[in-house]
Length: 131
Ligand code: C2G
Image (cartoon, rainbow, N blue to C red; front, side, top):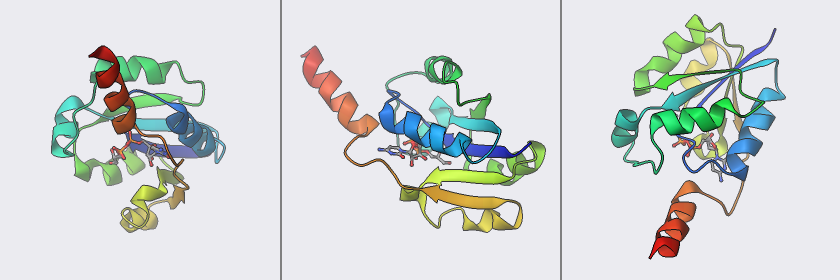
């Protein structure tokens, strides 16, 4: 069984997130997602619209996702790859090159990011709509 791993905040879940998860899963048989906690998002300089529990509930409904666990620091990836016996680590190519240091443990793949959509824009639209 080929095991895939990715990480993210997945706030205001949208088409591009679905596309990333679908493409990541197509590289193997089992996809784990390290979901950024609200506290880690602060470290990332992000404030998610939906809480960790809400974002986890949404991801749990995505058929491509087999397992979800908390991402609460930058340093946990190596341990996660070993713990979950990961074969392929996947991120969108906005992260291209950033995780090449993991390539001694598993294959590292950067997938093309979907243009013209982001949680930031969606949150702005939601804010304008609520006015
Ligand atoms: N993504 C994408 N296209 C977009 C938006 C996002 O392909 N238009 C991808 C990102 O490249 C990432 C995933 O969807 O692989 C999740 O995106 P975010 O929730 O924004 O994740 P990020 O904040 O980049 O967190 O330790 C890694 C970090 O936790 C990644």
